[in-house]
Each structure stands twice: as C-alpha cells, then as structure tokens.
Image (tube, rainbow, N blue to C red; front, side, top):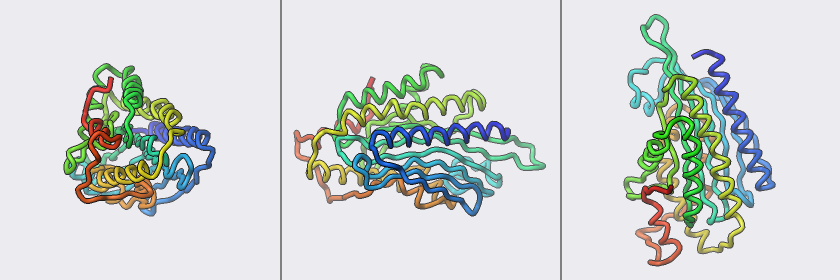
Length: 303
C-alpha cells in the first residue's frame, strides 16, 4: 500500500466522522465534545461524544489511527501468518444510545487494517477492510426494520447483487448471543477481511457502507423521537441494554482488539450504555409490547 492510499482512507474516515456528528448535533441541538488523544505505542485519534443529552443519552463517533509492532492475540489468532509484522489500523466506530426507548440503539463501524511486509522476507503488504451497521430496537417497528435493511441493500447494490444477502447473513451470525440464543437486534450488514477486488474496489465498498448510515438511521430517529414513554419503558430499555453489554464484552472482536492492543480504554468502552440492568430469569408478560421484541430477535428476511 502506498502513502497516498493510506492518506485517502484517513481523509474519508475523518470526513465521515465530521458529517455524522454534524447531522446528530443538528438533530439534537446539543454539541458533541471533542477529545483528541495520542497512543504511546503509536498513533492516536479523535473521540466525538455526548453524554446526558435529551436526544442521545450517550453517543460516540470515534476516529482512530493506531500502529504497533506486535499483533494483539485477537488478531494473531485470526491471522497467525502475520505474527511479527508491524501493523496499523484506522477506522470510524460509533454507537448511539438514545434516551427515548422507542428509538433504537445503533452501531456502525468502518475500518482498514494493514500489516507491512518485513524487510528481507519474501512477502507483500497485507490489507483488508471491514465494517457494517446494525440496529438494536427495544420496542420494534417493522417499518423501521424494513427501511434500515433497504438502505443496507441499496448501499451494496452497485457492487453486485450477492453482497447484501451475504453480508446480511454474516451480520445475523456475528451479532448473535449464543448463551441467550437470540440476536442482538434486527441486524443489518457486517463484513471483514475484504481485500477484493483489489484496494480500490474494497475501499469503494467500505465507503458505500459508511455513507449508508445517515440515510439508514436518521429517518428512524426523527420518526420515533417524540413518541411517549414512561418508567416502564425506561426500565425495559435498561434491561435490554444489559444484552448489549454482554455482547460487547464477550464476543465483539473490535472491543477485544482495542483492549489487547493497548488501545484507549475510555474510547473503547464508550460503546457501553450509560446504565443497564440485569434480572434473574425474568420474562415479559405474554402479549405485552415487551414480549413482542422476542419475535424480532431472530434472523428473518426484512425485505
């Protein structure tokens, strides 16, 4: 990979972060905090975040570009042939936890990883792109799920008809809580280890995924933000947020990579909800709005 290629990815990612934050600030009327940081081992980033907002109880839109000389265990186990190489990773990762339980939590991530060829070794630079976006409702609306999945399908359509069904299935399988036998939400798309059809093609697909976030999520946010809710709905939201914590700490590759690579803990754990509850063997009342969520936590064809 050339310096120009790396710079192009960085320019896109920082621009994407800026566009998303601007849209959220405009919607909520509240400013995001900017926290620039450096990593002693190499690289750094800019965290844009809000806490305690009226629209977003917690939200983070994070850019990072970090470097290292030894792959963390989560990466070396995945690609053992890259052990001993220097590496760099950059990406934008975001999670939004709205205050209103009728508005779903959402996550989006786009990223690039590169492991440099070692001098004197018969090897080439290795790169791949990854990312995706998904939706985690508390009180589900079928129209929202269909809209979100249509946006995901349309974003991938220019790259070929097989990408959406493949990445939709990958998302359903990845965001699955095995110990609960349920999906984290209604899914979306997810991909990793993408290096075909070459750098330009893989980069273009990653951009399509990143650019899909605002048209996929903002109409849902605007549609649901003024719906009424009370203590019951907030309590159920906190209970379901517990599932979000379980997934991020047990299964999420990005969280593991960040913590094992000496990443900035404050930024990595910004994806956690501001509050979460757990109850012993609790089940919603049959026929209640809370019970309806269970039917949404199964992979299905939303289109």
